[in-house]
Each structure stands twice: as structure tokens, then as C-alpha cells.
Length: 88
Image 1: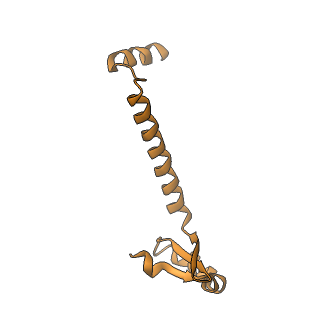
Image 2: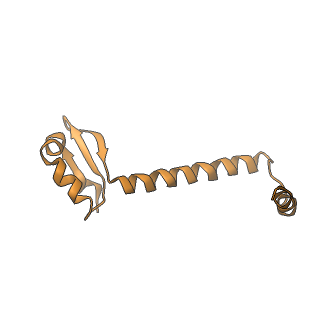
């Protein structure tokens, strides 16, 4: 669904909060809330928010790993596995 169809004024949020919460069970797309014509906040289903946070955390780990690799901070696979075997 297009984000354009999910834009609502803050008055809609104030008068339809319960319906918005119920609606997330059918359509988990976030709703963009505007105030004075400008986007001010996003309202979203908690499960979708948690998924988003997990994805961001994974992307941060991948970026950190890439940075470490580029800096030469890595070990050969065999050495790593040997170290892991010693730790167990």
C-alpha cells in the first residue's frame, strides 16, 4: 500500500484512536500523522515496530563487520573455528 494513502491529520488520530488500533490487525501499514500540513509522527503496529528494530540491529552488525573487515580485523576461518573449539 502506498504511504500516500496512510497520511492522516492529527484530528483523525484524536477521534479514531481505537479504530486505528483495531485496524492494525487487518492492515499493519504505518500511519503518518500530520500537524498543520506537515508530517510529525508515525503510528505503527508494535509487532511491525519490533521487526523493524531487529532489522536495524542486524544491519548495524553487518555494517560493523564490514568496517572491521576493511580495517583488516579478521581471522582466517580455520583459526576462528580452532578458537571457538577451545572456548567450548
